[in-house]
Amino acid sequence: MIVREAYHGPIHPKPKGTASPPEILEACGLDVGEFYVLLKVLRAAGLIRVSKAYPFEEIQLSPEAAEAESLAERCTRENIPFEDAFVKLVFPPSKRG
Image 1 (cartoon, helix red, strand yellow):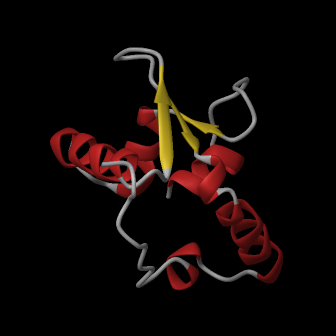
Image 2 (tube, rainbow, N blue to C red):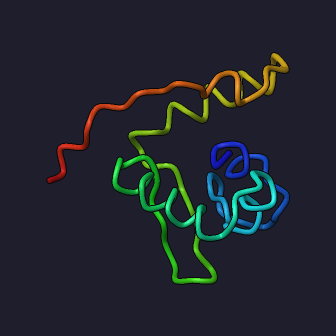
């Protein structure tokens, strides 16, 4: 969901590859508490970076997760639901202590 909203979300103008909490929350249906727990997990895994303070956070994919953009673009081109492509991904534990 973050990938889709970062590159194709409805809020503009914004930096390329950036998503905001409101557009992600609207698109995924999580409640606010669940959303912030998820952000914490994704940050700890090194998949996203969050800049600016609440309520103006900007969420960006980390360089390590940048390949997700090309996969998302392919899904868009080939009309494949993002959920079908981004299911059951397993990432090794972070080496960041």
